[in-house]
Amino acid sequence: MVKICLQKGFFTLIFGLLVFGVAAQTSEQRKLEAKRNRLQNEIKEMNRLLFAKKKERGNVLEQMDALDRKINISQELVRVTNQQSNLLNREINANVRKIGKLREDLELLKTDYAALIRKSYQNKSQENRILFLLSSQSFFQAFKRVQYMRQYTKYRQKQGEAIILKTEELSSLNKDLTETRKIKDQLIAENRKVKNALYKEINSQKGLLKSIRQNESKYAAAIESKRKEARRIDREIDKLIRSAIASTNKKSGSKNTTSFTLTPEAKVLANNFSSNKGKLIWPVEKGIKSQGFGVYADKVYPGIKHQNNGVTIATDKGARARAVFEGEVMTIFTNKAGIKGVYLRHGNYISFYYNLSKIYVQKGDKVAAKEALGEVYTNKFNGNTDLKFYLFQDTKRLNPEQWIYRL
Image (cartoon, rainbow, N blue to C red; front, side, top):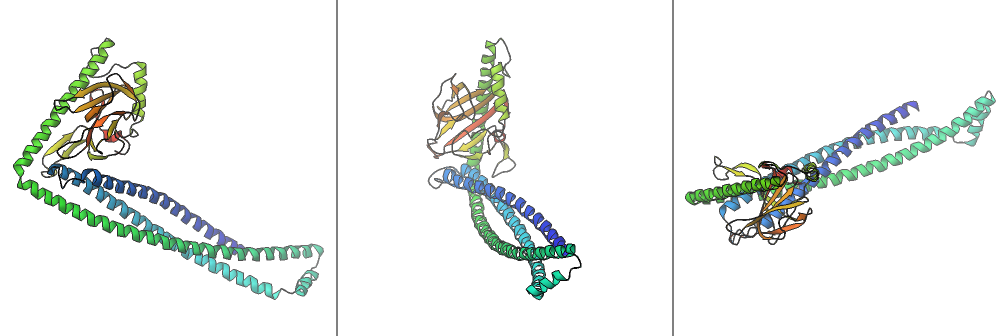
């Protein structure tokens, strides 16, 4: 009986370790599934916002940018789906091992139970039990024998119950294994579908590259035009920020033009803004990042580098730019073409919302997070609705991707 108990304890320990391992895998599986869903939704948004009207209008450069982003997301989706499939493989293998252990455990229990039944059958008659008690050499021994018979009967019942539980557990694991294999097959099929779509996108990109290279002079002119516009906007942004800092500091008697002189209230606001790094809301309710922050290689000629000092977010026609955090309207900006922008101050941090057609706020207004600042401009020639979003700490440019949640 001691041997059986030790064996049961060993199998319980093994089972516990296996359950812990599968629980950890299940947690990882949930994270991967959430990531996969985000990537799928991002691809859907890209199809809706960036590719809806490309057959009717839109230039080749924008199509290249959009396709490149979509290809990158699709490749990430393939990787995540592969990770899920590998994790499910490990889960399946763990289940197979558990089933093997449970079968061994069940066989041991059945063997032990069969021996108990045989022994019980041999001693089942009431006469044998009475003789067993009467043959006792003392009252104490008779008492011990009564206890033994009770324990023996109880142990036999427990063995029967254990067999039932192990059988049910084995059945449940077999069912889980079947379901896990179905999920794995679905993931493999989905991965195949994503890969096929990815090949089509890559071929489409190759076609666009060919089209661009046939019109190299036009492409070079378009690049130079974009660069000039970007440099002009950057100069205007820097000038406006320095002017605003100088104007604000002048009131407190400071001549500093590169950083704000903060009041106690402004310090609190700046600290609150800083503590929300990576958790700030998006500057539009719905959208997709179409161009990230920093230096990036040209899609056609990788030797050519481009610089983006903010992020570009594609959104729906009629969408409103909204404050990413509470603050004060520092400046309203309008360029020569009539495109508008709003600067919000958050202590010594500045968020800038550019490419607006309408403005809903005025200089000096206090705004709350999510409050609408203006309507995003829709380009009449290509139908794109893009918000340009910038972040600064005093005059220092910040990467919005590090501050906005999942940007």
